[in-house]
Length: 165
Image (tube, rainbow, N blue to C red; front, side, top):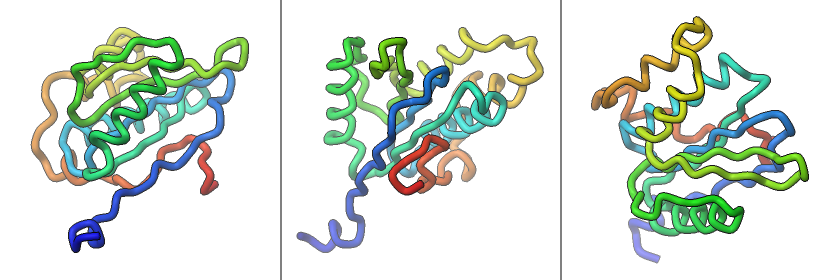
């Protein structure tokens, strides 16, 4: 093992139990230092704050571990679930949704990057509803290369129950 690998080991994503019936899990994985990934996390956090009974989050942020190994693995899992995957998406972040279907089967929907997450959000949430005022404006335009967007909490695994809970 070289010095770089010793100083910056690849983290292992935390496993999650099935999504509670009636909830949607917003999943975001990507680099631990990225304005697009940071913005996606901020948006997902705001959605779960506004709709805690309907949404939960799961995150995996690791600049070394995200690509190619983790990204390829999650894309294969989404395909195995029967959903299509944006094959050409190889950037950070990669966003997808998980839910538990009527037959207790895991349902996965690949979205793609932060821009596709925002497309889903704008189609899903009503702009005239004040509950959405904290996150819908964040879906407009490119995120700035600000400290807040670049250096985000890349350790917290989200609101979904994990093996650490």
